[in-house]
Length: 584
Image 1: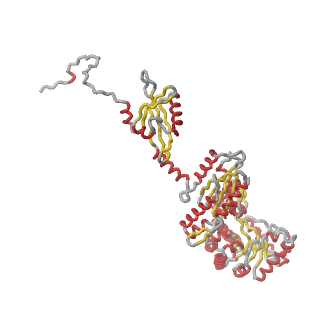
Image 2: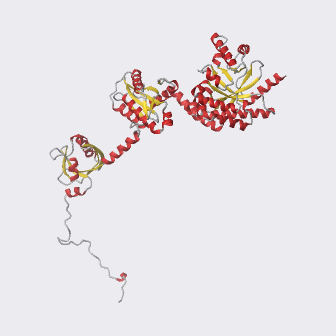
Image 3: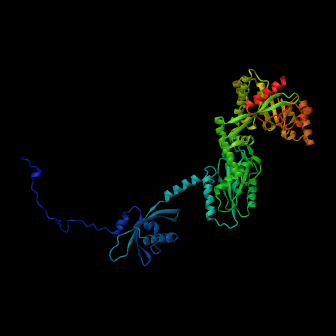
């Protein structure tokens, strides 16, 4: 078969006019508007706007079922008709081609939500402009969103608002409530003091049960319009409308105390709920609620220390912020070696010899400057940093003795006193800590004296006795600090392995002017003698005080009269100068 290339085929010019077929060559494409609407998967309808009125033309079955309650009444329920009408007229007058909005209506099973769209249809000659309305049912999606939001804003255990939900509830009350010119609001913060003990002793299930019961009782103490929230692990807060200022807040506090006064039964135990309560009041309704909540929390921290209901005062939040800064900086200082020890001499009052030094923590921070030990030790105890701080002091004091021995060429005839916090005694293995400090430094136990307060012993006498016996096993002397300011039981004092009583400076510093203080000092000296204990007097700031205590037979003293606390090298030089003087 002979092949022919397509390039060789003849090409002829055709007419530019399309061919017209017969009447039966094309199907009928005319589709009625109702069929177009029926084909749409969403609710759909067509409207017109004539003579300032909206007229329903046609709608699909989905639209009729949902939006048309009856042909006579119109196309939407009365409750949403006004909003819908305003939306449609606004769209028509805007000149835009399309618009979307959400419509809410009340259904048989609750609120229903629809995402609606409006669009313009091409205008036809001789008729008004028409508009296409469509709506997608978003009720299930909104229900899911609502449930998720409820979970986000509420506490899963008590079903109360959480911290975020509490803020939103407050904003809603302030925005939508009816408030007079003299009204203000207050925040009452509540901290369950012994919650951690319940968790540790009875387990988390009991802790959860306690929280649920407390939440119910607190809720029973609320007035109409008050909001209760759980804003932390064992922290609750109440938003209260105050028409009479502080008196209203205190009335609510009294109701809270009454609600929590009776014990709560957990398992077979009756648990008494102790709480710390702090209040903060707004100055006016424009106050930032979050700021008032922070002030209430600052007040409750003070209430935990004082045991009383605390009302926020100006400056308290600043103090709380400083305490937070101190905690943060102290944590870094402990990790990076930012603290130092100062040493205050202990003087034998009969001979003038230096018998030892008391080690005192000192901190100079590059941001905070010189921070008082009274301030940073309180923060350390509150934050739990007292344990690493106490360990650092014990190790550093032992190492200082070791360095002094190396300088002198032999063991110095002095020791160092190290203070023990009651919190460290309760949480740390203090005996092992001292054993390690002595072993690493290579010094004898009798050169490191542990100073502890009466309150540390009274808090848990059995545990304190075991600790003291363990320290005596290391040959360490034991001194009871601030003696006379606590409530020691003399019988237990006699049974404890204590070597030294330290008379608090509050008795010593004014004993020459105050006869009662002098009597107390003499009594302590007499008691110590009968118990075969040595006595150290603190706060000796004048020669007259030193001579008076010497005449009373006091063994040892310390105070500014002899020397202020000094650095490690200065302390060694001070001892060497006095030692040389005494030996000559």
